[in-house]
Length: 428
Image 1 (tube, rainbow, N blue to C red):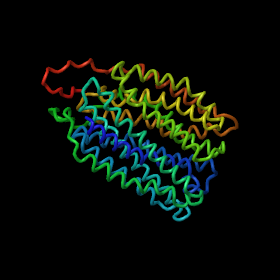
Image 2 (cartoon, one colour):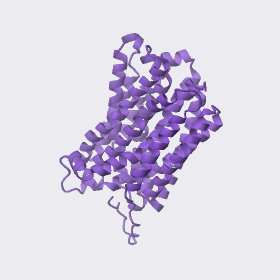
Image 3 (cartoon, rainbow, N blue to C red):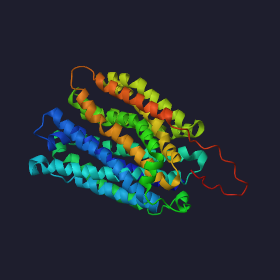
Image 4 (cartoon, rainbow, N blue to C red):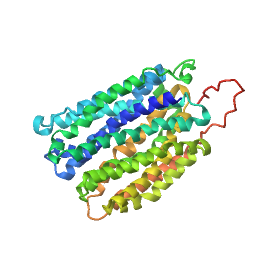
C-alpha cells in the first residue's frame, strides 16, 4: 500500500504541478504577453479565460480516460494521462508571445491548456482508484488521502519554482523568459512520474469483474445521473475556494493592492503547506466518523469564513492575508481529504472510473473554471471586494445542500483476520 500510495502521490503531484503553474503564470504574466492589446483588467480576464479552458476539458478527459479505465483497467489511465499533460505543459513554455506571431499565440495557448485539462481529467480517477481499490476498507480514507496530497505538493512545487525565479530575476527577465522555465521543467517531472508507475499492478476489483462495462458513460447517465450532478454541485465550493486563494488573490493583490509578488506567493504557499500536512489527519477522521459529516462541516466552515477571508485580504498585510487563506484552506481540506474515498464508494466497480471522475471534474468546471473570472469582474470597484465573498458564500450554500442529499458510505469496521492469515483488501 505504501508503494502504491507513493506512486499515486507522485503522479498527481506532477500532473497538478503542470496545471497549477499555468494558473500562476495566468495571474502574473500571461495577460500582457499574450493579450497586449487589451486593458490590464481585460488582459487578466482573457488569461483567466484560457485558464478556465483546462477545467472545461477536464470532464471530457474524465469521459475518455474513464472509458479506458472501466474497459481496460485503471493502470493504463495513469500512464496515458501523465504523458499527455506533460507534453502539453512543455509546449506551453515554447509558445511565442503575441508580439512574435500575433493572434496565433493566444490560440495555441488555448489549445494546449485544453490538452492539459484532458490529461488531468483522467489522472485523478486512475490514481485514486488504483489506491482505493487496493486499500483495506477501514483505512481507505487514509490511503486515498495520499493522491489528495499530490495537488498540494504540485502547487507548492509550481509556486516554489516561480517564487525562486521571481526573486532571482529582474521583472524584465522574468517576463522575457523566466516564466517559461517552470513549463520546461514539466518534461523531466513527467518522465520521472512515468518511471515510478511502471511497476504498479492492476486493482483486484477490476480484475474481479466478470464483464467490464461496454459503454461506461451510458451506464452512468442511465443509472447514476442524479449522483453525478449532486457530487459536482457538492465539490464546486471546494474548487472555488482553492482557486480564489491560489489564483485570483495573486492577481488582485499584486495589481490592485500593490503587494509584492513574492510576498503573495509566500502567504499562499504557507497556507497550502499547512493544509497538505493536515490532509492525512482529516482523512483519518473520515475513517473514524464518516465521509459525509466531514464534508458537511468543511462546507459549512467555508460559508462562515468567506467574508472574513476577503476582509483580511483587503488589509494587504501579510500576516492577516495568510490567516485568511489558512482558514479557507482548512475548511477546504475538511472536504477534499475524504473525497478520494467517498466518490469511489458511491459507484459500483464496473462504472466507477467514469462516474467518480466525471462528478469530480464537473465540480471543477462549476467552481474552478468560473471563479477567477467571476471574482475578477466582481472586484472592479473601490474598497474590499465584498461581491467575491457573497459569490463564494452563495456557492457554499449550494454545495452544502448537495452534500446533505448524498448518502454516507463509510464501510463498517472489518473483522480482525485469523492468526497467521493475511488480510486482503476489502472490496469498495
